[in-house]
Picture (spheres, rainbow, N blue to C red):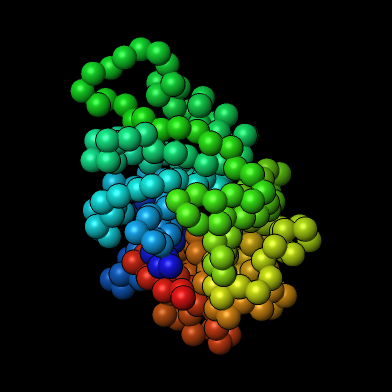
Length: 254
């Protein structure tokens, strides 16, 4: 299994519009963060987690030519506004693309992308074709067993996903005990960690480190960082076995 970080930034992205801080003006490519997403590749199949507004650019940059399924963590703009770009995969693969999420997430996708689900035929491939699929507790998609992990995102909900010894949870502000039980014995944990200062909807670095200490994965990577995080400087502050991810990072798992 291979995991490619397509984006590691917060909803604003980094650099942010109209900001001249040292991170937003940095020349270090590891400080340039598209909106958060990963591609899980295994057995010749590609599963995308979240469809960011930069999905087209992310796929071109990382030469993603096939998508077999898309899993959505929650229906905020920075995680679903790239779904229209699935049109190209419809054309290349001659099929609808299945999109998985909770019933609430799928309802929001239906309303946000209402034009996709109307019965009006539009020739010329002007709208994407995807099938909405409800997640369940124990799933197998494209030959991969997948376990949804429910977490808290401020006053809302977010869904993480476990693929064997790899788990991905972004945008969480709390993880219930029942979900923590599903995150034991991991080789790699990816966890959202927005910044050092506490935030009502996202783990701070300190809070994310506490989760890592509790779960004890072999390796942990933080994602969904804002412009408070300078990659080289702040990476050196993390304990052994924990790193800030960056756009283009590839993690290989056995």
